[in-house]
Length: 402
Image (cartoon, rainbow, N blue to C red; front, side, top):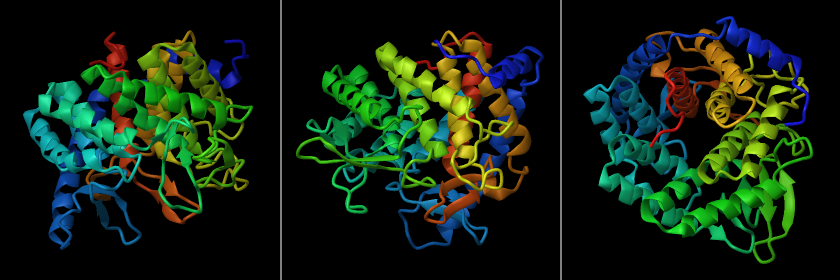
């Protein structure tokens, strides 16, 4: 690329070469196993204390210090089964396989839930990860059915998959998070041979590429379209500080999403977009030295604004994959290494505490005063994924294997 490498990039390369960013992956997974065993006990206790049988998955800890459990309809429900699959992938321990299968089964009803674009998060993180590790033919059928469900939300005039229903007067809102759900569609084409899913994913990625990004390659959170004409009505950042601000988790979703799109298509436009998003994140003057971002890069309260560990874990996982495609491989890997080390050393929960979560200090929806400075399940999911990707790179294996 033709941009100047910033001083932080040079420092990160130095840290990598001097061993600064080395962590013990085996020790990190041993910690994750102990915490997850604790989480399972807390999930059982939470289930026993409620009359709502559909509450099955952990999400966060509330202000009273209690574990919040959710139904499969919640967009976060697929992450805990995914974590269990990751533990099985690393340890090969049959107990994690059995638990992963058990919790994944609770997600199956979501394959037909067309009320939300998050069928990708819910089904792919659970069944998708499970299929990658087991080749279970039933999981294959669930993935394909879920992809069919997701495509019912696609509008060919807009060229996008609709996100939320009936919120804030939006006609056809599309959020940057929705890039993550495209992986389900790419997988469904691979498994079924039906290119419809692939074409929908490409159309969505191209529409977001055209309308979601500013000149500096930061992203809006929401773009609302007229479903009859496909024209943009307005652009907003609903979960960030302001409409023109850069919400940290949104930038991470974009980075991860376009890196994944390049993997699936080998279209260099997506690789270039991912690198431009990475440049925005990593050269941002408000990015802290430990590379764990504040919840919004434009919050005027910085440096007294809260950080978002979930944005850091998503970014680290994405950068490991991006490092396997880019000519800036060493830079991206060094950056991911430093993020992972920061998370492990300074943002990890205390062993045997925090209901079994792995990482603390994430932000869910600050403007709504929801889930502020708490552990959140998706931060843990992408942290474990980042650790697995780091381990694969160290062994000379593909970052994403099938």
